[in-house]
Image 1 (cartoon, rainbow, N blue to C red):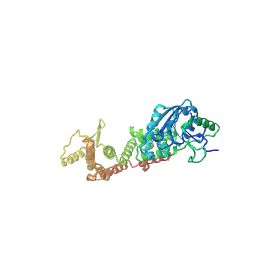
Image 2 (image 1 turned 180 degrees about the vertical axis):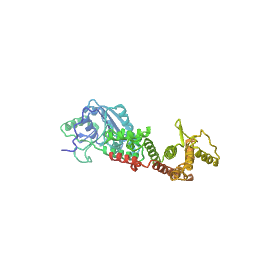
Image 3 (image 1 turned 45 degrees about the vertical axis):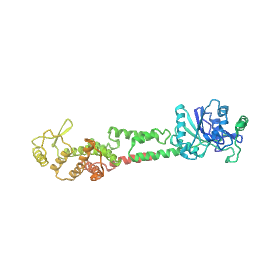
Image 4 (image 1 turned 180 degrees about the horizontal axis):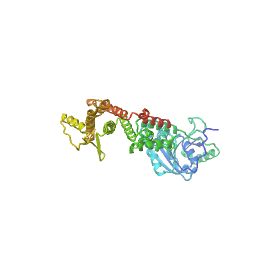
Length: 436
């Protein structure tokens, strides 16, 4: 079978055509040029013809293409087609960038005027730069577009074949129509969506590697024909919502995990995610809250009766049983020039002081102390809205060590955490990459 014989045009679909016009249009040697051939077989409701000023005016040519009655020619084979003629001066006609923005302008206009139509792009007529630009248009914005290529009836180059002339257009049109009446179609719909999908896959992999699941979701939502689109959207939407709503990831909800463990692990994974994305301010704000939660649970587990909670806030238990500890804590505060108050709210610095009184410089205490080192840096952002200077005093290294210390606190407090769960986001990313 002749590979250039196009499939039967889906006449129930509605088409519009954007076509550059070249020297072989509207016909040559008694046969359709690419433009006319597409109109003949697709019967578009509208045709936008793009002429360079030099072709329209006949600059350096034997005649001007403006001398053709383009609307009459097109309506003679597609009576219901409306015709719009665009003539543009192109500064750099041999530059591939010369047509990109102007083509996009007129194609966007067609999208607005005909939102439910398929746009045909003639990639044969005009210069190679024009055809390439239209192929790139399709690769970048593929929805409801088809690139059409038309072969020469000679199955060879058109070089040396006599061109048409407007002085005899009526007679020539009749000859062309007769010759095309029984001739096989020469159009071919180019299967170049794979190039577009390759670009999208690259973009998606980059976004996923950066844990930017929201942007990946918005990208795939626009790609209606993308392979595994529904599964990808479901997975990415669930991940995005879990992160936005602070909803613990389902795979780390396990029967042997307590609710506190699940929450602490989930928030540590988010902390690590922001750290890998170098969202430094977000890391600084999060790390203190996570550390406070883990240290509080550690003290409650290993040293019960030290704390009481009032309206979800933590205070020291002022009981007879706790008096020896309270006395030691008062002396600790006095050494720092601070005064003990019964209504003192227990934050990160107080938790670390309490740890030292209870356990001395234990391994858990040393990791907690590593986090305290960046507390003043965190307060600059959270309370005083000051900018960061990561080169100052090796601040980024301190932040990196604080994130690592948070993981160690988590492992000590919850020794039954499965190591694989610390790699959950990486496992998820591999899953998405597989679907891509």
